Image (cartoon, rainbow, N blue to C red; front, side):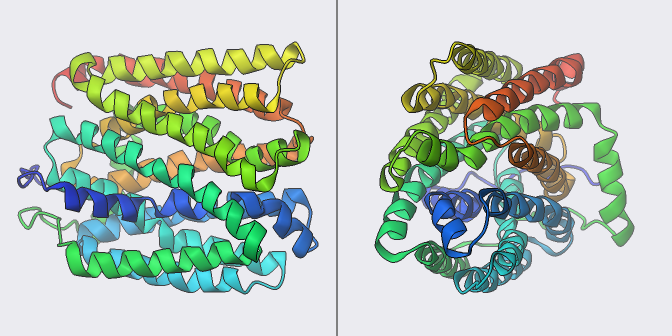
Length: 406
């Protein structure tokens, strides 16, 4: 095992902004077309459940392809793998843009995910490459808060694009975004993997995954983040149908509802980044999980009392997303920091398992979909309790190792 490399001096604001645009490909590709889901179902003569699968299959492709990108980025460097992923993303977006049937759209979304997942996988590894461990958690938090602008702005933009030009315009916008990111990275992003780190051998590309899967601290952090992500993705999957179809929110106004929730995530991530240095990683995570539990129980109680409305449900999810802003960036940093020599692989496996929980949430949302908010509320409560259990049994039990610097 190679010894950890000392990160280079911390890069400036321009570097971080470029990293945000790259890492944000996932949320933008998910959120821009959310207001178009009902229109897609109508235009392609498909059911709501099948159209919802365009989200689930994206997350599935996003999850599985990460397992390839991470080791390749550790072996060959960050830049070559980035450009390969961006090429696949742009080609797949063209397929989505001209999809004549829901089956072709599902294929396009799968391939789009395979290309787009290079963003967060390699982006997290780049943070580990360029920032010291004590700074990386704060940097990931700040990046998460900046990235939350994507789900704030994207549904707004996507809603108006859908109303003015039809649902295909959302994929035209994604294509332009992908091409723009490709050009920016070609001009401004250098190779960041330290030359002093020995590239893993072909055998190690596989065995490193086994090392991580056997590590209790890595798995504890990963599934704590996964539980929070499942709760978050339950709302992403259900929000447009519940708000637009059940509560009668206009498609062009849906983006404002979603922006309030996404803005809460940005605020939570920014707050956690500021408080994290004082509270410490475990206390920051515990705080986020406590807030998430309050939000989950609040919406459950309102649902049982028959008092949920569009604004109240959205308010509860805004509080939940604020909590996820504490949990997801902090837990991500905790999972990756002990493994600088295989940062790409650790980022990939963590992302795969995290996205796997999103796929489960998406499938369960489709299976139990009734048109109303009740199934989503129950899924959020179960996901939150699962995250708390993983934190207690996985992370807290390893607190001595964490205190020693893992």
